[in-house]
Length: 123
Image (tube, rainbow, N blue to C red; front, top):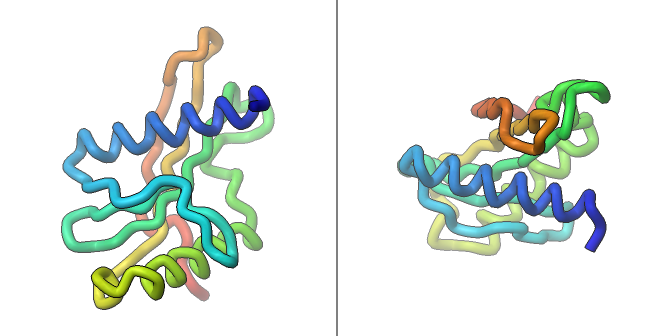
């Protein structure tokens, strides 16, 4: 497994635990649909949330929260809608797409976590 993939998995694990500590229920991790993948699928109360996780080792290439391109945003919306279609028990729920952006410090520890609700919205 590549170093980049290991870092991505670390970020996804950290984000899932971070959300869980805030009372969220984690339903799925790395769920794949035709349009793409959701890093985390969770319930925030009664709202189903597709969560994109971005981790950066530094901000030299920009902040983690700036890493979602317009094309990625469309795929996240499509994939979250597909998740609902594939899971009829959740089909009537309100839903949204959030971003959890994690920045590491020079030693590899978590320096900053930013959670952006409704980070991706349909235009």
